[in-house]
Length: 117
Image (cartoon, rainbow, N blue to C red; front, top):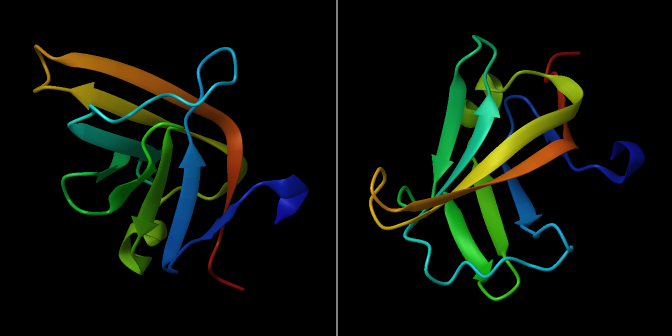
């Protein structure tokens, strides 16, 4: 783990634990979120979306904004490698568009390592 950042290795299964916080550093209550979408930049420049509805995201502490994101080896092989990688999590209440959406940015929070030697 470089500089305390979690690592994702391309081509490997991985579970990433994430805490969403507001500007004051307090956990965001996610009890009413009907969909959560974690977005990661892929090698081809598009985005990999991991979702609550697919079962790959679970709410682990709704009061403190904690989730667990589960990646398959196929998922991680698509994510662009790099140090200090950015990603974002979209929080939806109700159907979108028309519902409420909040976006939580995670700047330079993870390292994605090339799975090759």
